[in-house]
Amino acid sequence: MRGKGKTAKELELKVRGFYYEDNQDSWFSRFTPSYTFDYLAFGRLINTGLYKNLEELRKYLKEATGYYWDNNVFRFSNIYGTEFAFSINLDKNGDTITVFSATSDHNLRNWQIVPGVVDEILKTADMFTMGKCLCSLCREEMKLVDIAGAYYGGRFCKRCWEEGYKGSEPMKAVEARESYN
Image (cartoon, rainbow, N blue to C red; front, side):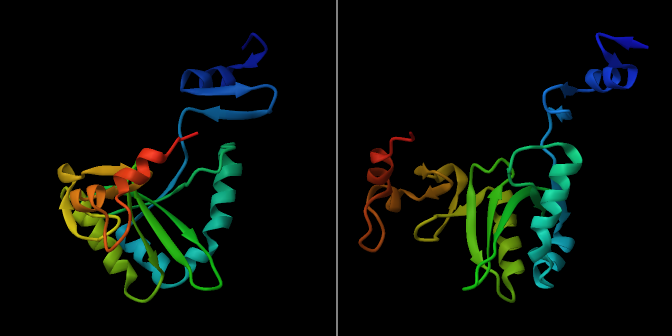
């Protein structure tokens, strides 16, 4: 059975949310593919150094799904099932990991990958799940509802937002100069 030049399988996939792009000869969908590690697998990934192979895995996922963007595709879930996005920066001066909320609107923190870092990451993720976070500047714990301001992925307490921290400019003034263009 064919309709408008498409096979029955192509039409079935279209009904399920897939769209065929003739000009790119691939399948596009309305989903963003990702790998989600549970907290135990995430710990092994970081502690054993296997995280250094994630770029190869990302490229495989991109090719296998026809997903053409370079969005972050790696996530982990904590013991409560809350998902967090993470990215790894491989650097000769020391590898780092950045962890974001699942929607990537809140940067939990950047960490050097050193022994014991996984426990600190999971503790911070659990804190976020419980409605708390650390100020991105002074690192004081605060409730999410008490966030005074945001600048890109960072979230700031009232003191850092309005007065600055240890001689730094108030983040409110920094954000006010931003054009977002």
